[in-house]
Amino acid sequence: MNTELLNEISEKLQRGKAKDVSALVNQALEEGIAPDVILNDALVVGMNIVGEKFRSNEVFVPEVLVAARAMNAGLKILNPVLADAGVEPIGTAVICTVKGDMHDIGKNLVRMMIEGQGIKCVDLGVDAAPEAVVAAVKENNAQLVCLSALLTTTMGGQRDVIEALCEAGIRDTVRVMVGGAPVTKEWADDIGADCYTLDAASAAKEAKRLILEMKKG
Amino acid sequence: MKLTASERFRRYLAGEEVDRMPVIEWAPWWNLTVERWKSDGLPAEHAGYEALQAYFGLDKCLQTSVSCKTAQTPAPPGHGLGIMEEEDDYDNTVRPTLFPAYETMFPAGFFDALQASRDRGDTIRFFTVEGFFWYPRTLFGIENHLYSFYDYPELYKRICNEYADWLVGLFHYVFSRFRFDFMSFAEDMSYNNGPMISRAAFDEFLAPFYRKVIPVIHEYGVPVFIDSDGDITLAVDWYADVGADGMFPLERQAGVDVSLYLDKQPDMAFIGHFDKMCMKFGADAIRAEFERILPSMQRGKVIASVDHQTPPDVPLDTYRDYVALLREYAEMATHKDTEISACPVYR
Ligand code: B12
Image (tube, rainbow over all chains, first blue to last red; front, top):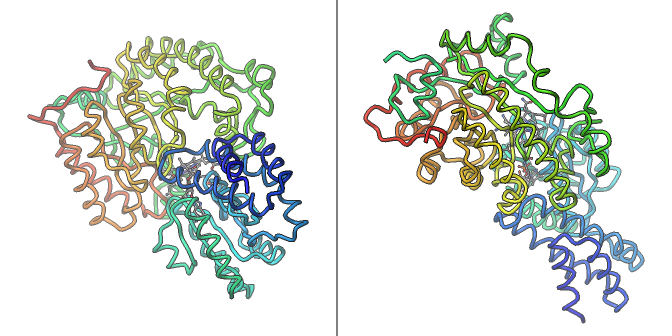
């Protein structure tokens, strides 16, 4: 297999070169490389490297955004091919910033990184009510809920969502991950969330782990 | 030693002896917090920005904020969105509405009134404009701004360059009429894990414009502070390099430790750093937090103050305890017999 080409796709993705990524993904498909191999060994690998570098302040928010855009350019070509080949996304996550909170830069980065793992994300945006999360989980058969909160005054909204999931009788069908500047591991444990991470790269890794765990049952 | 609020502030930043540290709040209070305090018994007539400072017995510290946008400038269509969709929008719909003539920006008698309050000696005045990270963000929108470093680098620089030219004129106009005690650039370019942009991006997109305007502000003896939340441990050096005199609010939750900044940037002054998150735990926790900052207050130009707005989980009585302790600790930071360097503006 043409590992050089896969590496090149990953390189271009890391540098945010969306057009190059599109062209190279097309080329890889023409060369007969399987779509899931392109996804996992080029796009996901590239996005993981970007996530790690972001965590260690080697690259910053704009670099992550343009890399994610390049990833999406690749996915746009790959997704139909993956679907035709019967390759399903690893799972589905519902993500939002909780009620009363308008901060979304972090939430968007987390979404992009999670998508970068081949997970489908349903993004409810900012200021999302617990009922909206419950409805989206049901509608999309999601395995994961990701809740962002940047304010001490809105963190309680993460608990409200967990309570709403319990009340709707679907708490056991999903894993709940929380994050945002004021959020801590203690808070996550306190409100009965399943996972907390400090940054988007770790969030993506944990998302994959939680979904696979969930699917195993 | 009897000092006016303004003299005390200047001496503190110049590394000279003072009677005590200035006792200030730089930000207006969070509306949710004020609402809460009203239900705790704060009389409504004291709830305004200026009235509250007097009510709590703080040194008055009042902000004059101006923008290069006008009533004609398009409003963002939604939260966080920009006012330009296409590159051409800057020239076609935005730029013609920017950069008002300076004479039209201030009401008659404005500077005389400021001078009169300076002569009474009771008020610190600061002047605020948007910085070279924040300002383009208001035009591009929050997310597009972050893409713009890659998508529209030339437009970004042109936007900042034209703004810097307008600011140079503004600073001459304003500071020749009244010497504000300090000025601040609103930036908010950091978050819990550090700056949102790289040093390379800072050097290319922000630094040239700061280098253009800061010397003009310094000509008038006005110290320049950069206002950025989040962890500014890297950014503090970047802003030092372009000539800034200080930064605030040094957010504790984001992991800032001002004592390290005093080591690496001893010429700079720092306002804030008091962990707003500890206030809800009451007077003992507040005292412990002042004990943490006190050594830095004593060996550098640190003006302890809430590190951004007091959150609504702090009862009115607890905030009163905070102010009482702030006054108590302020007395311990006189810089008597202490060798402290002056901010760059005073050199
Ligand atoms: C930019 C900003 C704003 C922008 C938001 C723009 C936008 N569209 O997002 C604006 C100017 C609008 C704003 C408004 C306000 N803000 Co603000 N804001 C910030 C600032 C400076 C940076 C936030 C940010 O964008 N970070 C960048 C991203 C990349 O980081 P992040 O969000 O933390 O996300 C990372 C991790 O946390 C994690 N993560 C995030 N979400 C999730 C979710 C999951 C599931 C996981 C696993 C991980 C995870 O991964 C991300 C990437 O690694 C912070 C300061 C700070 N220390 O964070 C203040 C801050 C959050 N704001 C604050 C305040 C007070 C406000 C206002 C109330 C101010 C006011 N009085 O009006 C309003 C509130 C508006 C509202 N209702 O939401 C305070 C909150 C204090 C408190 N008591 O909680 C802060 C901490 C500032 C401070 N110094 O105190 N703000």
